[in-house]
Length: 335
Ligand code: UDP
Image 1 (spheres, protein in one colour):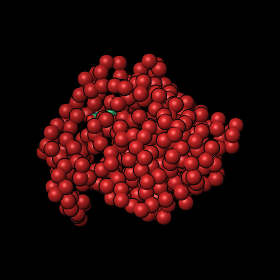
Image 2 (image 1 turned 30 degrees about the vertical axis):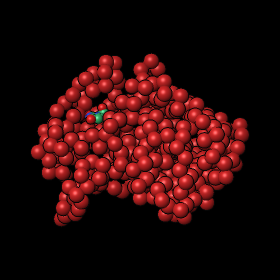
Image 3 (image 1 turned 90 degrees about the vertical axis):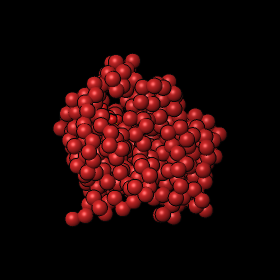
């Protein structure tokens, strides 16, 4: 099987690439190394079945280089992370809309199937007890960059759906809910690596707002195999499928848990949203996936616990010197 992965040097992309190589695929990556890093691919960079193209998905020639000849494509390249999107709204819009159109068109031309990564952000401020895929979207003004991102990803889904309906492209969409794990960087604002890094360094954990907003974190090691199974399942084509964690936690409780699990001396400090993201930023109070569809389609069972996730992130060598973190899991989860 020949597989192309856009964004293959990113956090989720690099885990996916490793998984696909282990399963025997030939893998071709395109990544512009904006938020992705070659270090993420350290373990596989010399692999004989891996090729890497440094390039942007806005460049059709570069995309064709990896997609032509592929049996399937995983499209993960995107401008992600709240800080990046707030700071560079135009780049995010261009990459996320035009770039996706390029990948859709190239996949169609190659006769490849496509799995497109979307996001729970598209549900916006819908704080329902759980969000099945057909839930309404509740978005703020498109002049606020957070909603610009949600709008762009919504357009991506509509594009994918259009390519499926009008051209028969065999495309499936996964909506990822706060996927976390090793190699995710806190640099663009993601809460788990941010707080874990602070706890490891003995700094205050910065909890934004009142900390009572909730999320359902899912482990990258649970999500990646499910993505591949969904890509391979004909019944998911032309549809969107949620992939999220099964436990809801407030950010304040997350911070407390991180301190406890890591045995950190850090304190928690509440930071007003305006200070964290600038004026006018809106957060969602709650975001809970309904995973029924993924469970039915591919038996999705996100089994990794929050404590295990915290330890896996703390052990990540990019968090702190490797020696300091080695064997942390054994110590922390012993007994
Ligand atoms: N957050 C926080 N401290 C941080 C980073 C994020 O309290 O250092 C909050 C953020 O405001 C949000 C939640 O944690 O309520 C999840 O943030 P993230 O950016 O990871 O994901 P998203 O907002 O996209 O769910």
